[in-house]
Image (cartoon, rainbow, N blue to C red; front, side, top):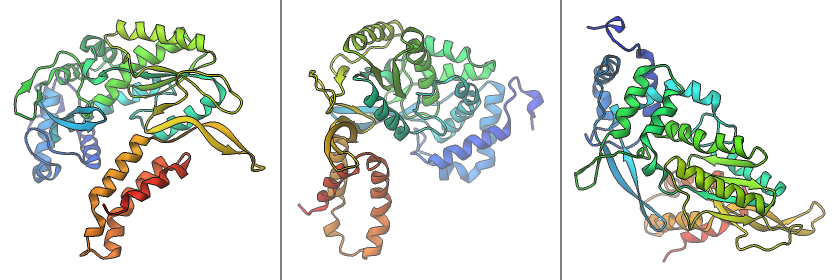
Length: 370
């Protein structure tokens, strides 16, 4: 049996094991080979050795990525599902890059990072909306379908001295998608949303394309970014329009495009800010920010600019509750229904009830039989 000294690339077996543990914890569906994590574990030692052996020798080539269509408002989006073995291999690279990327990433980058969450981004956004009057609500059009491979590789090369990391990133970027009808789609741009390596690659790309650009060109503005979803806080409308124009040019420069219909300027209207604008609300991470009723400690009401669960998220929760058909599940005991439903509802309330929780109450009406 060959050992590490026989391999061109020094990859720790312990690292492969750690990657496996992460993949197992995240669960996930089977890829194009139809093998679940349980199937993979039937010969766990042999399968992990195969991954380590091929990656260490430079002969690991990723299989196609299974394309799964996921419904979204106004259509569908493609989610890429790698095989279990490929997710483990990708996680080996992600774990190798993580110490370096975490040391350089901006504090206001929240997506898919250790010890950071979407709720932290929402909280920071709420605080800044109170301090600055204008928000530039950004939407990068088809980010995961459009990322320039050459620029992505350049960003990776700037942050590692491990040749094997760059080698495998290049191979994953061009791994074909297997569409639902079985045909293979070659790729020369983008990185499949849903793969284990995509989050760190997306953050690395946007670190240079967006975060550092704003820090360099507009040091006085604030922002929160979660992967490709971002909002920028500005003092005046004029400043916001300047930032908009500069970011539009910057995105074009790196092969991306701001969505012309979804990118907008928002005035953070409340009791003390009585101006007018075309838009006085925006959506961010499942919340809608806008003027809402609040009260001073003495009970006097006023309007504050606050986040609350978005109508789209509320509708999706209600739809799921209706699909349960609880009134027809007469064979289940009450405790069985509670054990099934409570973790889901608790998750909703933990996330969407964090800010302006009273707005989640209408979703309870969705359990009414129809």
